[in-house]
Image 1 (cartoon, rainbow, N blue to C red):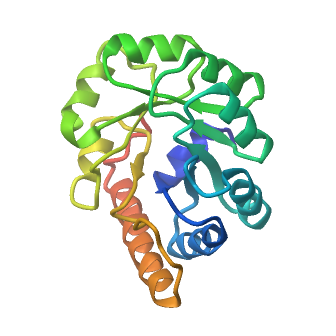
Image 2: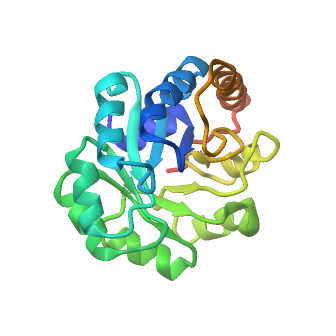
Length: 220
């Protein structure tokens, strides 16, 4: 199964930001127990290369693990060599896209305007991260996909249980979920991890419900 298909199948991309490296595997385990199988570990994570290596070693067979907040090709190469299966950037950096594709890894830069989206896609991006999704609104995705139906879009920023259905209905292939799912600077206590698993299950169950109702249309 290719990367885009895995994102579509799982629907939810959990964003793990600003966590201590030693807590990452516990956070991933809690997410997996709740039914979340696609995770983005951001590059500002303490000792990111070790964090990716450990995550892939422990959960690479069960989860689709990538790196986010990748600002340049040098960082992209580091996380790819550590085992990241996809690279997400908060901007469109053409050299980062090219390096990511050279290594056969899924590229997901951020873009907003139709010009930015098409520029990134024509440079080799597989999926476009649309940020900030809440400010732009789900209708923006529908409008952009009118002239650009061939571009897979994954919105991120301000998406939660109460509004994720709107973005899937507009044609998103998945949604990125940050602090409403994985709280910042977790200490990974048993209580925190149990709460995380409970939140993850709410999101995973909601996605299944949307699929059953026909709201999830697979995007492209």
